[in-house]
Image 1 (cartoon, helix red, strand yellow):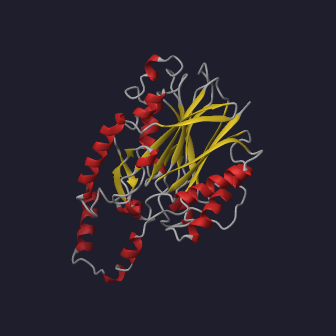
Image 2: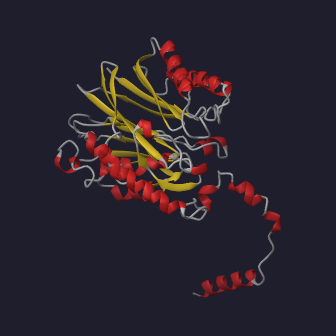
Image 3: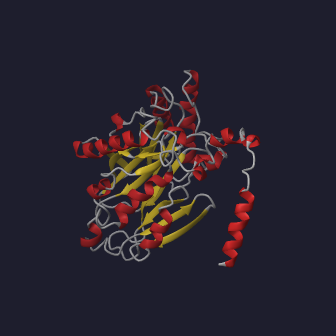
Length: 385
């Protein structure tokens, strides 16, 4: 029988600023799901990273189910009511619509769902990021499912040796493409290296996979709030579901993708590059410069619709080195202040508040003397070449 894992997250207010979830608000969301999930979900878990509340649900209703999405929406609404009552900052900021319309996608909250055929043992990891964008998952998902230096199972496990299929979304033009590794690895890298536009949405096994033919094994939330709202309304703070073991990356191979901090976009005001630091849930308060950007990992096992766990996987001394490196990178980047490449390039600042500042100066510019003549001269020389 098919089972669906749905992970839905939202920022509905925090204490103070964008620092951390207010525990009573998280409790309100948890209480709503518990009191209203009978007959809908077989199990659930509510947690947070930074200022984002995260709901993981197991059920048998498939992806994009209006009842499941409606349950999460109303739970976030219940939490928002309390957040507004106590005056939390950004109360309900990810709830961009006034009323639920049958599908939570495009309404603000991030959604990652997969419908699977459960194995005898179905282990998976929920990865949750704060203060960054969906493209932040491009690098680690590629490392897990396509890089043999990270995942030796791609070399020595017959079930992984044929590689995986990547579904990649162009979140600007609203298009998608499916590419296969390892044969189209360079094409995959050509796209997902541009992480602000091209994002890995799903990873599938191939039909040749002995244990899991043509199964969805990873999925990422890809909702960009700036594109939905038309302006900066908060960081996207993505999450992902990654299945592991038995012909898939082992837990250690999956986690290894976060052992060396890499730069992601977001951080303060959604406008800066910073290192992604792996932390336990208790280490996810967003403090220094509203960060640095963080990722947490919770490990579950699914059996007969019930969730065993979670295990807080980054709450371990093995990742102390990665945290130390991330903090050293933070020190280096912060010395740059508002200068690129710490601050995002102008093309990525379009949906932040910077254009409002620059527009106020537009009528104060004056022409540069001889600039137009020099420009025309360069064009004529180019034509002669």
